[in-house]
Amino acid sequence: MCLPASGGCHRTTQMKKLFLITICCLLFAVFVQDSIADKDSNYSFTRLRITKLHSGKADKTIKIVIVGDGYTEKDLVAKGKYESDCERLVSAFLKKAPFQKYQDYFDFYAIYALSYDRGAENNPGEDKKRNILDCTVETNPDGTPKNRLIRFQKPERLGRIVKNAWVSL
Image (cartoon, rainbow, N blue to C red):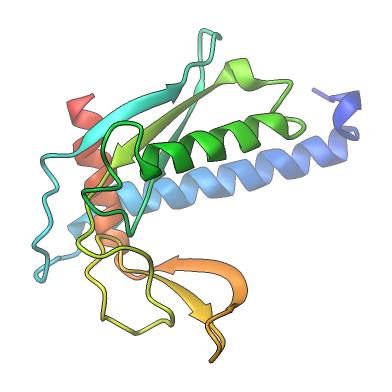
């Protein structure tokens, strides 16, 4: 199927490939990485809260799950910083083409996963902050980001979070 408004078949094929790669990565994180031991964890993977941020109206929808890192208990309250950040992300996503046209085909969920410290590490390999996914953002010596890449160093935790929260839905 070609969508003329999105630039033709070539662009649609590229989007489908990118989407499939993203889904495969998420499935790998959820189902394969969960088997990796997480011996140093003091995090609760059983008391996770999940909320639906946006409901598509189609019979079958694509489910997108948002998992934040570096949000403390204070940030995870109803209408708190985390929920506000998630709603802003969903809104920005659904305003962009071609997603704006197909927003009835998406469901968005937010999983509330507690970190003990706010924010992310400044450089890969650091382990100063106690965050559930142990995310890092590479920075310059003056603290400005080197690039827009955010990495999480504990992929096995992402799998546990998504799997356990989804069961409670």
